[in-house]
Length: 125
Image 1 (cartoon, one colour):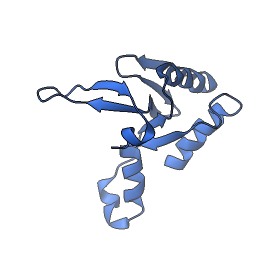
Image 2 (cartoon, one colour):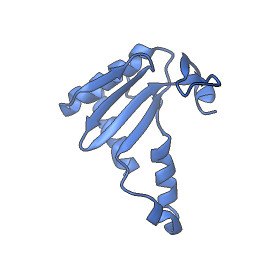
Image 3 (cartoon, helix red, strand yellow):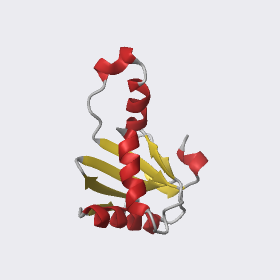
Image 4 (tube, helix red, strand yellow):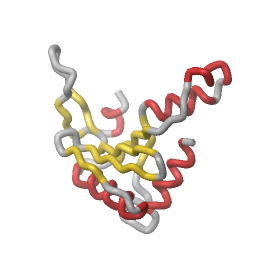
């Protein structure tokens, strides 16, 4: 299923400034895809509906523009969350959340991170 959702995004950005950008699936959707490769884990995985992607950019407005482009292509709505620098688009029954590469800094007594722009390497830690 991950490859299908990747294809939906590739189709939506074809011919735009994001066509050759680094847009990568991250998080639980990747974990689910890896677990599906091993039959002993199939009973643990339901149908994945939420997909998280990271856009290698240092500009938060890029992720909002990417979300608007995908939403417009599929006749959907984009929801932007400026505090966290993310955008969410629902297309064809899938919830796709987009973020730029970033670092999250947590404090001892809070589950809500401060988010700052980061690199692909920093985002993957």
